[in-house]
Amino acid sequence: MVRLDIYASSEAGERTGPRLVPPPPPDTTALALDDRGAALGKREHALTARESGLDRRETTVAAHESALERAASALASRAAKLAEQEQALAAREDELDRSEASLVEREAQVDQARVAEVEVADIARQRRRLAAQEEALTERTLEMERVEQQLEERERNLAETEAKVRIDLELKEEELEDREQAVTDQEHRLTRKERELKTYVGQLQGRLSLAQ
Image (cartoon, rainbow, N blue to C red; front, top):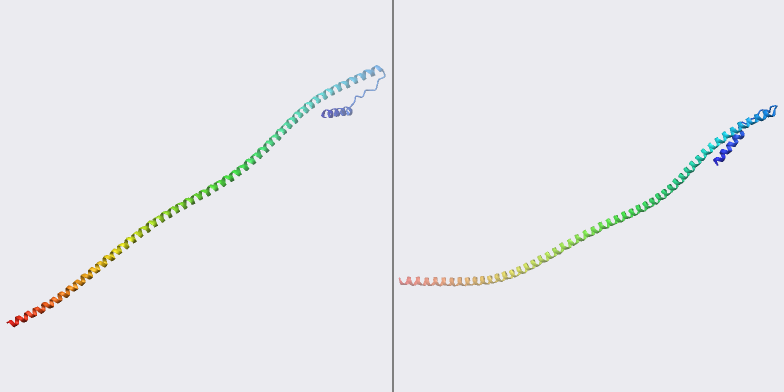
């Protein structure tokens, strides 16, 4: 298309350019032919120069077209590569989005697992604490049972001791009562003997007085 435009502009320029107007023919035919030949030679020389210029322009335009075609091909190849890169980037972005979503899900699962571990640890601690409390309560219960057994044994021992003491006291009281009774009886006997002795002494003194 460029080449046709160039040709068109060249033809237009050729049509609109200055033309060699032959001088009016001389009187003689030979002179007219010589002048016409000279004019044709000049015109031919001008046309040859113009053709050379057009050839050079065509060569330049062809070089430019080839360069443009190469540039267009390079641009098309670059555009294709860019499209492939864009597709690859879009695929990579999708993959990154999926990876990010997977990471978010894994983080949520890890958080849930951590919460579950904390809850399990809390439950385990509560169980250990309850087990320790139960063990302590069991030990306290056993200790209280031992203390109760000891108290019951002490109470039995005290009851037996009290019974023995009561029996001993009763025996001692009976013995003391017997002794008191014996002492009372002995005091009565001694009082009676004293009275008898006094009577006897009085009788003796009366007999002695009569004897004198």
